[in-house]
Image 1 (cartoon, helix red, strand yellow):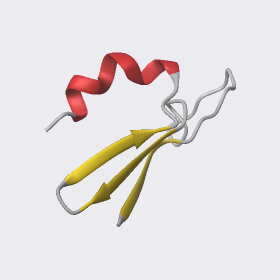
Image 2 (spheres, one colour; image 1 turned 90 degrees about the vertical axis):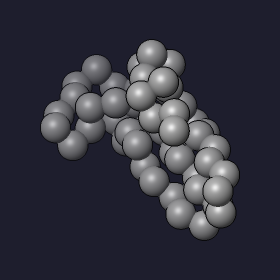
Image 3 (tube, rainbow, N blue to C red; image 1 turned 180 degrees about the vertical axis):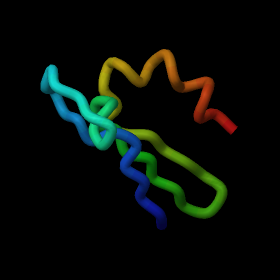
Length: 51
């Protein structure tokens, strides 16, 4: 199992180069992927991370 933190900003106004997007976690196991804890700014980006 592989965990990838796609965003770590949380629900704050300030952003930086290290915390650009709201929190999101991508879980990979075998050939399957599951994105959880996805903040509002990720909805428009889903096609970008779709295989």
